[in-house]
Image (cartoon, rainbow, N blue to C red):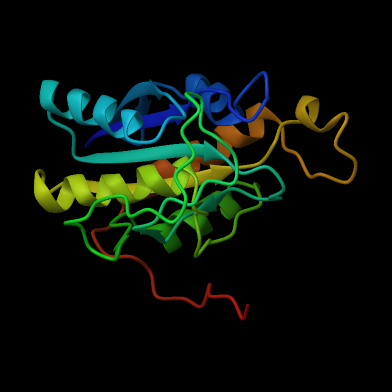
Length: 213
């Protein structure tokens, strides 16, 4: 498979984005998958345009976007992106949509077509904490997960897509008491395990990874 791995630039006043740093550490071949990396801006709609332009230039079997989720302890593959922008903070170009649909002709939500449970277990088996997430928020991370579903729905029906959130790094939490963090090396290790699991089977595993609240 040829997989496009995207990662956002720093946002929200941070000097780094652990997603981008970890993706840059990934090898160009993972379990037989050819890996192409792409930095995208933390900007509503522009992020989607850059990915779409890359998809027009080459054939990809899957797109996996990676983003920062400060406050999370684990790598969290996302199950679903919803058709809603509700930005608590502005993006990197000052846009702050509130209660706006992402695509007026899109579905209410798009579920990732990657094996998110298999990926979650693969990350854990590599020794890195992981949890399946049922919300990607309402900022640019959810935006791009939803947009990937929209792209697959409208333009590239065979394209698999998904999203993984990663924690802060230790250097980001020096002045953030009680915030969890993870090293870039461990984040990259977990991402590599998740990517290795993508082509193990067309079907996801059926195990209980749901949440009660």
